[in-house]
Length: 248
Image (cartoon, rainbow, N blue to C red; front, side):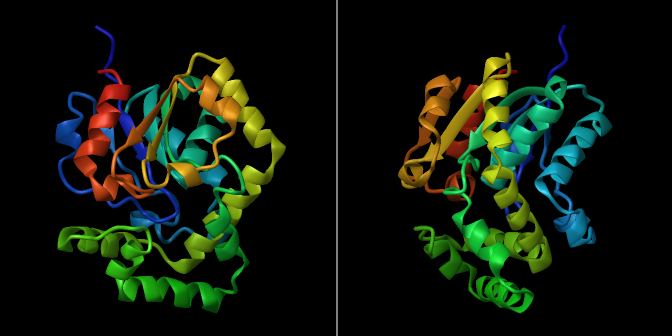
């Protein structure tokens, strides 16, 4: 019998706010939601060692540390760009990609551009304002948050220093502005790696996916009633989509 492959969730610019139940829902596939370099348990990593490429190398190493040769990658926002770089550098390690509003162009990285250009004190003040009122931060994304969602958003906002956010933001701007990035996506689509697109119904129109990617993607799925932070808004619906896209 073929080995059941793990599902690796790759968080975005902020650490992913998943609540309990992910592993049970996606069983029998093993599930891992690692902190990228600079985040959570790895927040000690210095800014100069934080980048999309470093995150890609880290995830590939993580797959092997788990004892697998291949994994399904679910990348959200910046995590979608990380998944692309992994598949470009280590195609043999990728069973499939789910890009949940992953970054394709600079139009997707507009907030990252703004953050990367701030001075350190300005970035720190912005992050502290979000931490002081996570409910307002969620409301800015159109989320009328429950108390549980506010608590998990607060955890996500506290999981990384502003220096990590600026380093990763600058790297995603550099990565997606390089013509080789879209060429890497084209190469992935030419290969046998399934490439799925998932968007929230409220945020879909703002997701700048090149038309040729939409045409060639393995599937395009819209999560009803959700915005960019789809897994925080309705984790059950998001995981149901992932379960449909990724085979056991």
